[in-house]
Image 1 (spheres, one colour):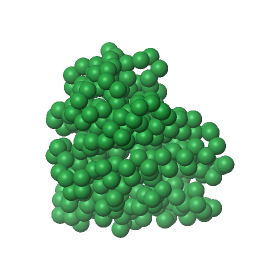
Image 2 (cartoon, one colour; image 1 turned 90 degrees about the vertical axis):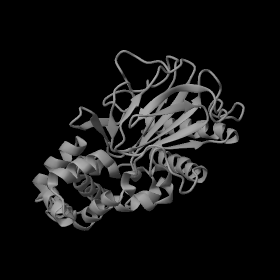
Image 3 (cartoon, helix red, strand yellow; image 1 turned 30 degrees about the horizontal axis):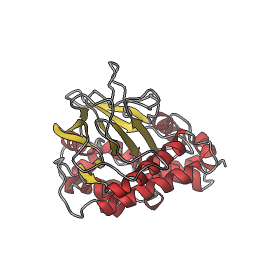
Length: 344
């Protein structure tokens, strides 16, 4: 995979194929990106990496973390065919462990990119490119929020860790995609790419969510149940993270703050903020805000309640404050979001 001096990549903001925006910078200088939502468009993005000019992007050279889930699939490594061309070709996926296509470094651990393997990257992990990516290698990166999956829509974050469709994201995992499934994976990824790059196509939203679900179902069936991952982290399955998310879920509609959550759990606000950012890519306030925004988006899309009522139900002081925070979070007003979510 070619690398550019500009360090372009799918997880950097405002680049082709990217749906990420800088959220914060950790104390060590590591940028943390959040998924940049668009009204009426599912929170999922696909980028294909490779050495030919028509590819969407290149692997990011800079160290970074993100607060969304990422699934990487290595179609081919070092010029050896992986899953065949989308929609046809010989069934494949490469032999596990063969066709090296460079590597990633996740939390400082080298993760070789081998044809026919998928790598799951939960939120919060620090990712960067290792050695040079060969021109003949090809890979896909799917970035998504659980809200993009119909079965997970409305499921609170505290329940994500126990959901079977996200089981493979309890840690950084390497999952072998059998050769006979390789062509199917490439086909699904190509289809998902097409639906997400042109959301104006009739039914694109439903199609993208359905294809993502099919990928996650297949991933869950291929990932060994209960197998330990190599990444050393556990994302939202972490006991402390689960305790924080449980408090967020129970109290997000109240005027709760990071300090009150920390006191309830017996920690200082600063310590809890640092721990949550390191383990999930988000601070306590980020999780509170995202949960409130998720409920606000749901009420905007599914009801005709006025903004004042929605503000009261989502922990914001009033309609004006909800509008300010919503605009800062989504880049648009609540009413504009409602129009986009309910149109078509």
